[in-house]
Image (cartoon, rainbow, N blue to C red; front, side, top):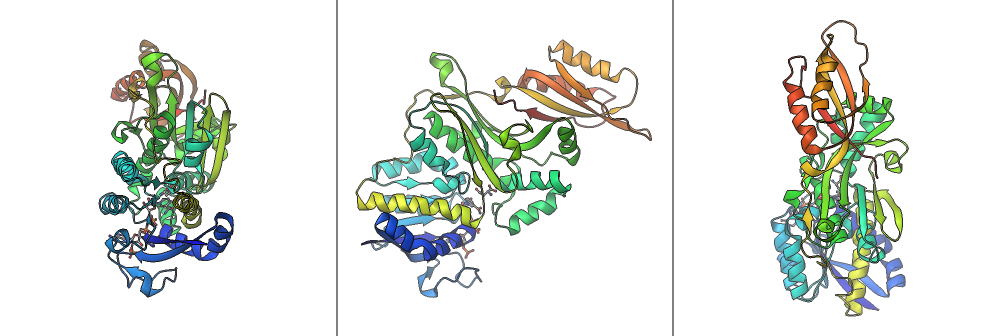
Length: 438
Ligand code: NAP
Ligand code: HSE
């Protein structure tokens, strides 16, 4: 049986999980694939660091070049994170003609196009199943299973940390920072957790999915991105009273139309109110889900653990199986890393995007306040679908919740700026989009 030697760069949460999973299931994979996978060398930052996973000292090195340049190593797995050294590691391995497996969505978002191009030039391949939605094989779905469909809608809960935080805030009234610390302890969060809570990680993943779905490399700088820091317990409760759950969504919407208009795609990441009756509202804790609509298949849904050691290791193993088979059969280009198949793809600016909105205002409880706010919205031709003003005793401000009909982001932003300038509005309004999945 052909033996395939793996060089693992990084043995932290995911790398440690991959090391353990290979010890556990390499013989099962050998039976299924006819290839024996073996970890040949492991690069880490600090050899003396105490690890949960026992890795023989003889395998460890702090010099990743010993892996990328070693002719005995067949596949390099990059699980170190970051975008600078990781880029060098991946480029160096690809230039040495080795296939590379990575879980690094930040790296792909920033440098994917150039790395795919090196892979193509050198006849290698770059595999990245673990970069989006943890254990859900969504890259395979888009590249292989959906090859005969135009993807008209994609809605993803693609950040496990944010979903875990929002779930526990809703379920237990838990404090944002406490839950974030738990997510870090559980190995869900990025080394820099602002990547999670400010929406950037979800934007990296949504951009990768949008690129695969629409065939042009989506510029991450053009993805409208909002995180969940501004979501308060009050918003979660009011949303609940209205029959909604707040989730951080990655959204990819193809614009209907012909010619150039058909090449326009909205790619955004923001927290949204989801009707409790929609299946994505029930995706809780660290679980992720991706809802895809294809023009032939209709609606499909993919669900599973979106972060953490074992779920992510499972996707890395899937890529290792593919990479090993491609080596064995000399079929590295069978499913290329990324095929740019559409020219002139354009991103729709968020100002043109249309949605419904939830607006929470903190206003002085005085006659005529609602009329002044409604007048601003009315002049902007923005309709109110419902209003809640709970009775508050003891003076001061009262919350005023407005549910708004469809409006463009630009019109809503302008109206909200005028509303927030009213003397009766006591603090910055809270605005959350409402997703209707049409
Ligand atoms: P992590 O726990 O911080 O592990 C990083 C590993 O990289 C550590 O073993 C570290 O060595 C090693 N490393 C760092 N700099 C190095 C260098 N210059 N040379 C050699 N080794 C180096 O990170 P992680 O959570 O496993 O994440 C790894 C990657 O997977 C990231 O791209 C992340 O976005 C992605 N990812 C993570 C998850 C998840 O749930 N955690 C899920 C999907 C994708 P030491 O051990 O010596 O410090
Ligand atoms: N920090 C990421 C998340 C890891 O929470 O989803 C999985 O990509």
